[in-house]
Length: 312
Image 1 (spheres, rainbow, N blue to C red):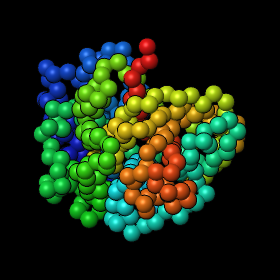
Image 2: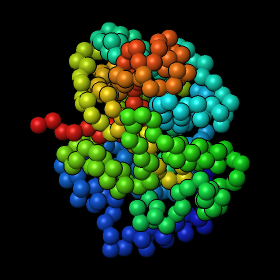
Image 3: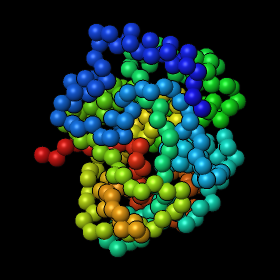
Image 4: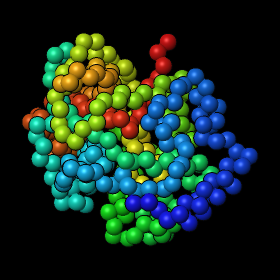
C-alpha cells in the first residue's frame, strides 16, 4: 500500500525545509561516530522513496508465522509476545523452527532449522527535525493515521498501533529500552549507553526463503561482546527502531552453512538470566525449560543492528 502522491510531496517538502542548515542524518552519524562504519540495514533506510506500509504483506505465510516475520522476531521479552497474541488471537505452532536455542548448542556441527525471509519493510528514516513535528503517542493515533493517510481499522493501522503500544510498554527487569524514531536519536541512545567507540554490526545476507531450511554451525563461533545495544526495526510509516540494552547477555558471531552450501555469519544473543521472564514465555514452551534454569539464545535477523564496544 503506497501513500497518496500528495502526502509524499508534502512530506518531502517538509523534509527539505527542515533539513536546511542542519546536519543530515549521515553527517550527524559522522560527527558522533567518525570511526564507525554504518551497516547496510541502516544505509538502506537513509534516502526516502515514499512512505509505505507494503511491509505488512508477506506472501505464503499465515497466522503467527506471518506476524512474527513482519514484526521484529525477537521482541518476545516477557510481555511483548503476549501483547501480540492478545491483539491478534494467534498462536505460534511451528515447533520445527529453531526460534530459540540453548547456549550449549553454539558449537560446530550443530544443525538448526531457520527461516530467513525477505520483508518489504522499506519505510525510511526521516530527519530528526521532521520527526519532532509529527506526534508519536497512542493518544494521538487518530491524528497520526490521518497524517499518513492510513485508514483506521486497516492492517497498516493495526501494526502501527501495535508498534506504538510496544514503544510505550515499560521495559522488563534489567532492560533499558528506547524507541528511536530517527537515525540521530538511535545514535544518541547508543552513545549514551556505550560511548562513542562502538561497532555497528548486522547479520549477513543469506538466500531468502519462505520455508524453513536446515543450517549447520561451522567452526569459529566467536564471542563478540558481553555488553551490547540491539535495535530491531518496527513496522511504522517511517523507520522506527526498538533499541534495548539488557543485563546478563552475551553476543556471538555464528558462521552458518545452508543445505545448498551457501554461507553467512549470523549474530546471536544469549540471555543468561531468564529468572524474571514470564513463566509462559514462548522460549520456555519451545525449549521445555524453566525460567532461570539455562541461558536462552536467539539469532538477530537482517533488519536488526547490534552495537558493541570496540575492543582495544
